[in-house]
Amino acid sequence: MRANDSPAPITVELSGGTGNQLFQLCAAVIVSKRTDREFRLDPLNLHLSMLPGSQRRRLSIGELLATHELHSAATALFLRLSNLKFGYLPEEGPSDDPISRVSTSTRRMSGYFQRFGLVEEASPEIFGRIKSSTVANTILGTKPEQYIGVHVRCGDYLKPRAQLVHGLTGQDYFMDAIRHASSITGLHDVQIISDDLAAAYSLLAKPLAEEGLTLTPAGQGSEWRDLGVLANSSAVVMSNSSFSWWGAYFAFKQHGALVVAPVPWYANGINVESILFSSDWHLINRYPESRSYET
Figure 1 (cartoon, helix red, strand yellow):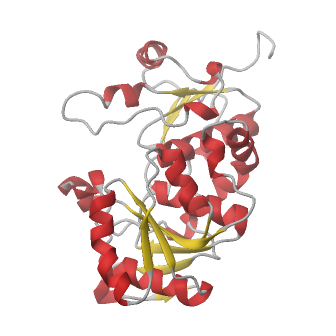
Figure 2 (figure 1 turned 180 degrees about the horizontal axis):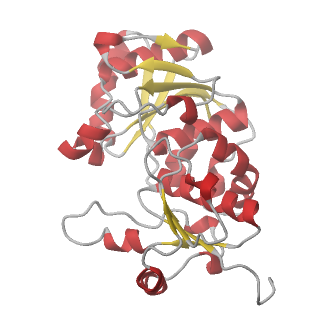
């Protein structure tokens, strides 16, 4: 317990799905450690996403949090209205690092905080929280399974607005990436997860069969179990998705798995690859007209 005159906690807003929330938790952990202040997470954006016309999101990382680390929606709203922009530090874009600008006056932060180095700094605590969770610890395996884990992102990425920012990662990329992973690892079994498993299976089943590769739909019905399919694989083929990123990171960190990632990450040309990926990951351009490989 901190003394009564200890600095006020720093609040980090939660938004997006599981992958984004994990990045935001990492940001909160790092800010807390660097400033010797407690953190709180603000779920108000998740509650507001339930309004008509919004992309619905829910709290996905509750299993990793202590009760006092999460504001209620009412408390979050009160604090936002009370403070308005006082002490508010937003992320100014995908390449921005607002954590480097945190000061004693900072009270609230928002952003996606998608940086490999940030996660590396927070990973001991993140893995500790996962290990302590009876739900999330399904992603922790003692040894890698002998298959290539593939994540195909559909869902909200099919919407026109999302396509302008993220773009769709299509069959050509996945086939090239799986061939690449198979040629290095010698693996021929492919397990696939997706937010639209039927569409993802239809996309890849026939061309993989023609090349002698076996495709298995591996969706487990929960986000943590789906993450576990990627996290415990010997190689991961990612989509341009934060959920994919975390599955790849867990596999890479636990087992030294081969990771194949798509570039560019954003369809609108914002360059984040140097801060988002490990230098050990294999990068494949996801646009057929400019196909390239980097290791």
